[in-house]
Image (cartoon, rainbow, N blue to C red):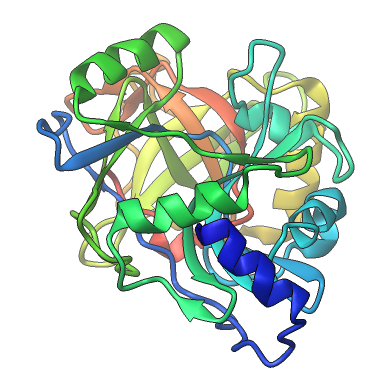
Length: 333
């Protein structure tokens, strides 16, 4: 019935339909240790990509990052696919991902994919505005029902993000077998609340987080590349805290590219609040003669095993550059 009602409105060419907002701050998630129980929660696989809103109006779609940056030109194929959806106006929330051969989203694959790559998929998980109607005050399940109806015949490159109501523990176990990051759980009866932390929560299978690049080290015997990236985060008092380093997971090409990005940001003075402690990830202190500090502007995502007793990351693997994450927002989770 909902689809037919929208079809009539399209046939009548209601060009005066209310335009969607230019940008809606995204609803955020709070990290929890235990997945919530009960049938009041819908559980989704945590997707591994860029959080992205899709604003559709006048036969065109605009892709907006979590901070409102326009990334349409970076991913024209996805924008064109969204623009072809059977609606006049819409504002969708979702995740732009690259899907690997096993059907699992991969952030490293997304980093390598070109804007026209057939591996790119926009997974829509919420509808905030549709054909002139503000849906943000409706319960989550109502919004997802409208979204699923809209995406019944979605073009290649656009998919509906499925969910499971209740039985979150079983879904988390399944996520662990898939080796994905974790689960996002959402209250089914709540409206869309930008910036709110608690109505949506995430439970992790893997430790994965963004960190600020605060410097780099020279590799042994060379200054033409990078040995490791030095990582940090801001505490609640606004101090920049050293968190360790990462050198695993980067190709030689990526190391060279990082050197080009970081060299213009180099500064003489140490940028972290306190000197780095003994680095148990490498088993020895930093050789300060090989360290270069930089202005804290760039953000990376890494996976890691755990935190050491002295507050450093252990067994860290590089995943990619996070162009969509402002450095000032990076905190230890």
